[in-house]
Amino acid sequence: MATESLAVKFEELLEMPAFQDIPQEQLRRLAAVMMRYHYAPGQIIFVEGEPAGALWFVAQGRVKIIKHSLNGRIQGLCLMNRGKCFGSCPLFNMEKNPATAQALDEVTLFVLPDEAFQQLRARDPQVVKALLHVYSQRLQHLAQVSEALGAWTVADRINDCLLVYANREMQQPTVELTHEKLAALSGTVREVVTRHLNLLEREGIVRNETGRIIILNFDALLPPCAGEMQRSSK
Image (cartoon, rainbow, N blue to C red; front, top):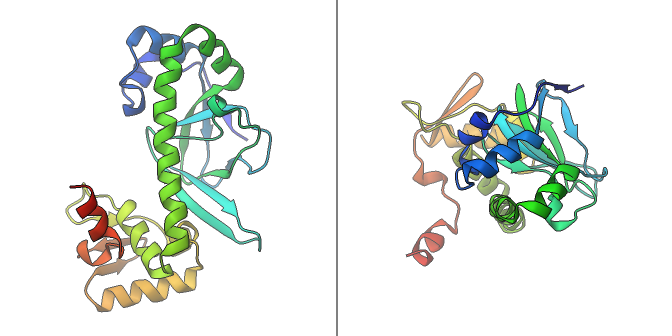
């Protein structure tokens, strides 16, 4: 069960990229109505289809967003790290959680309950506008994930996960995900991920180590449409 502590501090929101465009006075009012929750690794935060009632922001740790397909298979959509928001959006009157959220490691969340949001909506339209911008970025990412799941091969999806979740601040880009977690995020099974990573290692693209994957050649992992996307953005 999640543990709840005191209210969120204004200074904590100020440090998060998602809130940098909100004026400080409005940010103080937002912090005053948010709550803090802590979750242990593997703990379910909420379940797909349950009544929704909050917008969640990751203050620490990582949250896995997953859905169940019609045949019952778990499909990992994405990982939400520090500063990202998830959950149903009160702006769009979403009555049910669109997916399941699970803590991947020790997680601290700042939560804006729907009731508190409605109060802010009445007196602080600029806060609502800023939150809408944050949430729209999340919807854009999920749309890209949906497109990838429909058009890319399993190998493309695994490669994309390696690129997205690589820690590039290390001397060599490193993905600290187990094969099982990587399989859930890319919509396949662990055995397929293991075979594909072994193939990438033989080709000199990655190096597999216990508990992590070292990326040696980023360009070789780019999806088929990457070149066209880069050209269209120019």
